[in-house]
Length: 435
Image 1: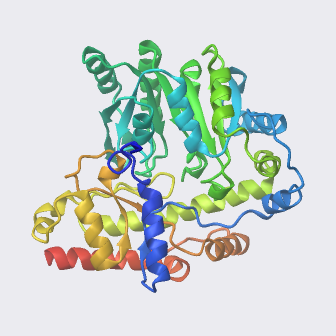
Image 2: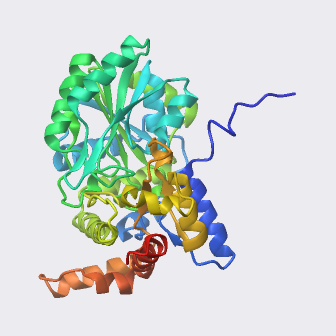
Image 3: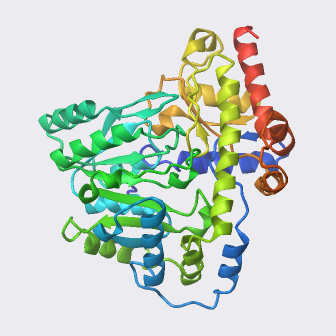
């Protein structure tokens, strides 16, 4: 009998994709599900990019594995201007999405993987698929951000080495999926110093960098360019997940790393489709209409997710105010005793009750590396008609420079997001009788 790898227990379908497929199925059955389990930005493709793709469908040739030279140059120029990355210190690689970039970076660098908790659902499974150990590092979350203590990192590295492990890389994501929080600049600098001193590669997942609600995207690469590889793409700030465009900045100071990554790419994906690469060049030219689109979408993400945070806080739930991306990461610990009375003792229990009895899809904190008994959830505020909301926001911008988005805007243009807030009130009232 052919023996398969232990996919049933070790490598399940990615939780984000699984919950999305489940919601699609339930909605097809006529059920009204409030979808907070999948973070897909809801906005339309900018007209300029749609036209660029349409006009380049005739490109059918294989392109260089590292990516179309014109696109790589456009990416480097854009990040130098918009983010301040010293692109002279990097080579650029184009990939079919950032997920494969992160997997390839983990593959290219020998040794074990330090993972701040909570972290995105695919980081740890990728490490396990490569036979690498996952070394968890604790974080703290509050309204000031996601905090990683440099002294704690140094201790984690020391303890891992004493245990016979080989920590060689750490994966940072900011603004973060699942928390919606950023790492404060001074903490990024301190972490960078430790990584330089301990010779740890920083894999900096900056896919949400341009969805920073304060429009203040900062990269840790400026503190440790020789020890930082940057992963990003178009899926979040331009709502182009299905285009599968990822970009990677590979430090030239690490001898042979670019060629190793290119070799890995040649065996995994050959090249990104030519029409997509040619069209994507327009996303990195700094066009005013594209930049305005990104800023407006970020404003809407901020408005929707702050509303969710405020509603949860009013219910006695710890819900740090999001600083970027389109997520909340609430902690229901304050209601643990009441929740235990209705059979909720783990984050999976919590997510299951919300789905089965309140028709809210979410993801449990355990999917992001948290302890199973921590009552945390990842909630996404993307379940609305992005085209209609964006059109209204742009109209408000044109007509009134002093406009303010408010709850009425959410009621009208994101009714499922608004309803979710009301359903959480009912859930807490049903559970605790306190409202």
